[in-house]
Length: 288
Image 1 (cartoon, helix red, strand yellow):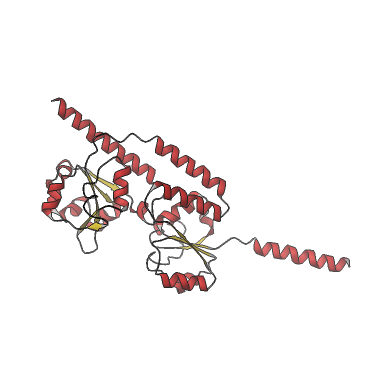
Image 2 (cartoon, rainbow, N blue to C red):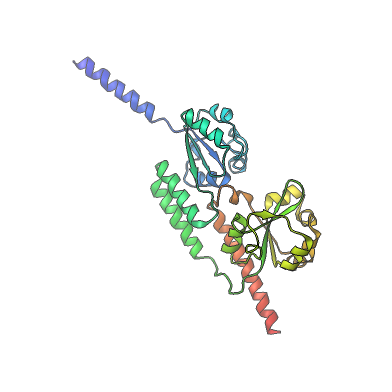
């Protein structure tokens, strides 16, 4: 009887040890990976997508490709328990294959706004037993947002630019992460009422918009070969108020992949400061 009880206890211990093995996690989308890092879950990562690679440069983790063009074979070779990403990851057929293979596929909201960021942090915390840490991070971010400089009454006009692979510039309209950055950054996007998503604009249209600030990603600048080369893709930009004053703001494109990530608050502070600078200049000009 005692021998039997000993064997049962040993089996229970072995079973508990097996279930205590850490989850194997693959992340897709830089913003999602940033949340994983902030919740101290990066030790679970066994692979990540190409947009996340710069965030985890010191780990030399396997790269599963671009988040929108994932490969089931490449991911399954890593034997993951969970694939965590946003609505931007795909293709859908690959996600279905992974689910059929027993991988838990978690798809988070990709909307670029602060409430969605807070919700995503909470969802990740809940799934991976970091609920208290997630609540603390959300509270910290909300406090930082509340402490940002107030947006000026007269918001400066700003355009968000992306360098397209074809060597042209696209301007962010309504519903884009760029538009959300402009709004939250205390500026005004003059094309938000004209179109949604990203479009290329003529020289005449850009001149008529009279942007005081141009915002783009550091990746777009690098791809173009520098700030001057980026603006040279559309020479009319040099004739705008922003171009004449050299008012170009570079933000990390990783902020915008799969929604916002926690570092967006620092970018909003940078934009609010720029907006306040424009407001102060306008006030001094009115006094003359």
